[in-house]
Image 1 (cartoon, one colour):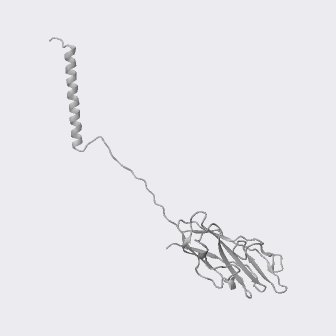
Image 2 (tube, rainbow, N blue to C red):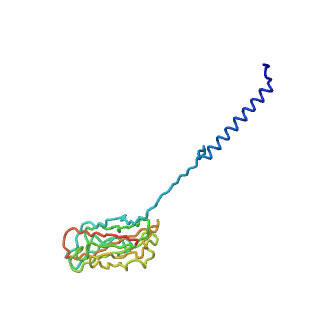
Image 3 (cartoon, rainbow, N blue to C red):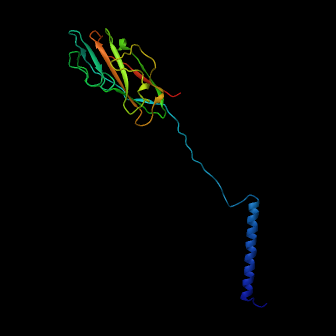
Length: 221
């Protein structure tokens, strides 16, 4: 048999390649028709949920007037108050006589902050009234809320009355509303209140330690 020329071999090679390519395309199409494919499509998601919260916290939770006595000579009583703007115009207590002797001169007001994520209605209760907390003849025990930051309670009209000049906690009062209609703000720079405390101690008030608990309640119906 005569040798095949290079041109003839090239023709045979091209024909074989064409047949092979055609078979591949036919096989690929059949796979696609049966649902088998080399392509893949998928998806993913990301998500999160933010819960709301109701929280009020005393940043300053203790007003400690220390230990002292009421001057027993003459007609005296001892008036003590925190240094905030609300109670008796603030300032230093008179602790060296003639009325009060030995008590702490300057006591910061309690400080309350809305640390939640909702505006709330704020109420407070006192565990004692003026008789059980101070005692003696004609005792007085009062409080006043004032803004520590700008407008935390929706305006002064939403505060409960005016407790300056020692208006009295005359009974163990439940749920005195301080900021009503969910106006105690949670926004930074507008969420902090001061609670000033004041008391007038008669000469015949009984000796011993005194403690009153003030509880703050926040609600967002």
